[in-house]
Amino acid sequence: MGKTCGYCGSKIEKINEVQYYCDFCTMTLSGSSVKENGERLHIKKLTYEVDPSHLNKTTPELMVLSTIELLHLLTLARSERSQNYSLMNSSWKAQEVSEDEMFKKLESAAGKEYQKATKKVFVLENLVGQRLGYVPKRINKQFMEKYMYNIDSCNTKPMIIHQQRRSKQVK
Picture (cartoon, rainbow, N blue to C red):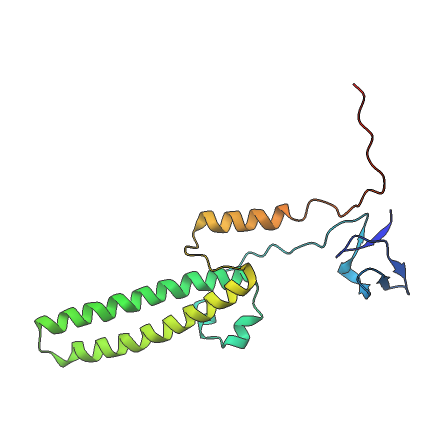
């Protein structure tokens, strides 16, 4: 079959030494978009160490991260939000028992951090939702394993359209 488009599997025309043209996609292809015999584009399987400082990134900066990075950050942001809520709640309960102003200040500071963490969770959930089509309620080990399995398994089947009907096998 020869050189094919990594997007649609069609045969492609050579333009020059480094570029090809796909008539179906109506675009010029180069490098990793050119495949052999209907192979699919390779989807990079990223492993990613979560850096808590990435939670301080702006929304435009988060938008360019990979989906796997966003999923890890969402897990971290949800955990941070939960911790801030617990601290805020504990401080509120301590105020009921004690007249100490320190608890009121601590509750206020934790409340501000909780609001900030909640907004970051909202941003990350919306970005993940745009990518996946839904927002996962829980991102645990099983979810991530299934996600990685789906990435691996979608790279396997070549894009070949049979032009003739297959004849029945005679036993």
